[in-house]
Length: 588
Image (cartoon, rainbow, N blue to C red; front, side, top):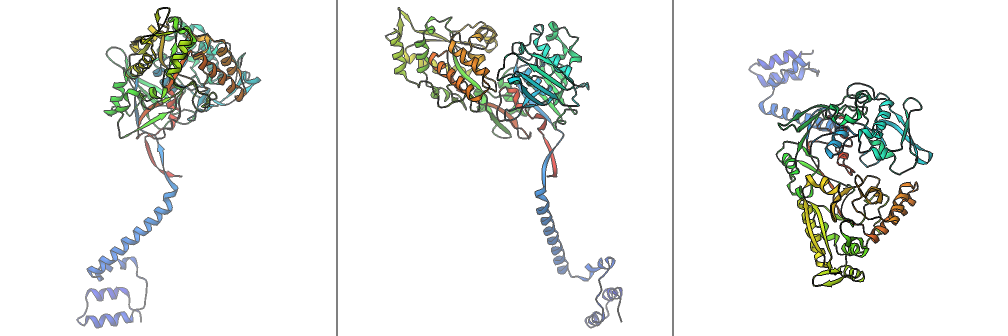
């Protein structure tokens, strides 16, 4: 006869006096059955304190084992994925003036334009040219014609559609002299048309390797700018309250009491064709100098600073930030101006000045710098480590001067009773002055009198560069991604607004640079650049001294940043729509 479990429990709650014997009798007569949950809840009353402790420990151990097993099974399939949110604050040096890609003339203007506008093409994080607003592009007619296929569903920040007419309007505005665009010369002679919907053709009479690069310029909205007088365009409010189609859109700005813009606030553009950026807002703060910008990072007012010059790199915070050292074709060198110094018209003098300089020792004075001899970086077609200039040799420099008719009188070389003397012009900036002192010492050791002229940065462009008011200039310059040195060494670029800061005219150099621009075969182009380098070393219109990386500092709170190489500071924002500050667990 089966005895119900309830009877058994009741028996144990109110046991008879012959407890041990009765328990044995009851249990021996009970048939094994699985208890119900309502019955199991009374189990703790049957267990001693020790038995309860053992049971709880076993249950906890079981739960831990199961959780560990599940974690080991699930974890490989989980990862941190970005989610929207966060405000990124960055310090920049300067102040916005033309937040307009066809008028932008400063790093600050170009930085903001890069965030707010999109071009037909763009550079990816590897420095490769790829489609932006254009879904695809192809070269035709030997590279003299480019065909762009525009993406569908493109919008400006005000909700208006971006169409072919906006692109044609942008190019024609650049070509209109009344706009006074800095890009005018580059777009001269280009024809643009749209033979069918979403198709754009651009043609040039003469092919150059940098032709496609022009179309990374941001596209401005025709419906906003078409009624503006081009002559008054620089004064238009849309230069400070821009409307573009890039990943971030203008929200607001704050001004200081003196009327200068203190900060710019940008919001993510939710209809951006690549998808809305993860970062909710960008706030850019403007400082008059790098000291203030770097201090803002140190004081946690901002999360990043656009650039840290060599002299400030010792002040970068040691924790909490990522220090990105991106490769950039930025060179520091000397330019010889023979129109103001007759002695520099002699090839032997220029060669001697070059041979008297130890590039390695000079580069060692500058943080992160490396000596350079030619205006090319690794990865560019003109880069050739096997082709080196004449090495540092003070004795050879003296021999060159002697053979050219100079005589050493005391500590100085002279000719026709006139000493060999030059004026070295630099910016009034610590690193530049340190390098200038090293140059002066090296040339003094050779026997050349050197007068050092330090010019304040604010007066440098107008008072020195535009008028070419120098004899020897120490200056840094940045080449484009394609490594074409035409703008800096071709004789047609000698006078302002050209960028060739040397006054030397060498027909052989001109021919080599012209042919390199026209070469479609990379090997042929390399040959032309090697020819240019040989003539550059021989004629010595200038001296390339060193190159240092572009140093960008950004908080480790910001992830997804991928900056390996840049041609301009604005290139640090490549892929900015993928930066994020917040994340969650998600499935791979």
